[in-house]
Length: 233
Image (cartoon, rainbow, N blue to C red; front, top):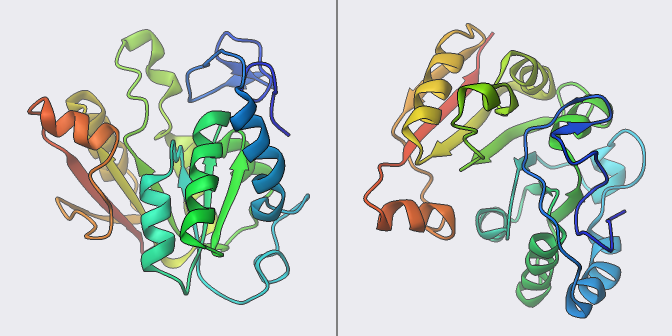
């Protein structure tokens, strides 16, 4: 369910959702008629069923399942789904207009392997994604929370790495990209400290388009750091 007035799941507006720190920034604003129409028409056929995810039942086939955290307008999610028709991609975001735009583009491209979830990706991992379910997790250009007092809100942390590791299949991987040097250093340190992952740096996925935050970062002369962390232990 989406918040029709403000365009995001309900929270207290102060960085807390259901009693814990959240890893995304609140956005406020009423939904346009177009956004409401798209969500009402397009979200139900692309939404995850209620309860714990059973991929075969939810998606109608046995296939690798990939989770994208913070998909935004969905450029990367759409590209992955289009170039990997044998996989199912679950795109997660809290911002209603972004999801609506992604779903409209998925309809235009006739993509049947792109699924959407509006809400907190950490809660989804905690409550609805069973262990050893995911082939990969994608985290592209997350909010860097650059201020020291906000760093606890970064998605990459011990708790979320524990969640990701437990939900990945053996040999599954986590992809991270950021154009923020402080977040790159943070990601490098967090991943290097986790012995469960074998990490390589600098390999950009050929299928990912240079849209949105990546394009802005490149235009500003920033360097994009890429991490691939494979679950090996």
